[in-house]
Image (tube, rainbow, N blue to C red; front, side, top):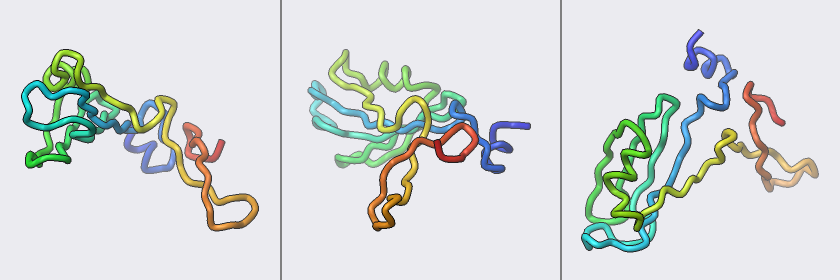
Length: 116
């Protein structure tokens, strides 16, 4: 059974979840994309990585072989960081407040999709 098959059955393994990041530029020597968050990306279980430029006149999406490749190409010698938006342990999903209010709190998903 493939990872996709397990995911469709609601049994994804933690290592099979995509992980999101923001590309944060501290200094822009090229003066093209600016500073702050300049793009968002996703690393897929295969290691393939997408990068979507979001915050300038450039609006494109590119696929890379790895997040390391993104850093090599767009890191500007350490002036840019990948800031992880998702924890390495797996996704976090909203959970209803036990008191019954409409607020939600975060809970970590177990590898098999049940709360934990």
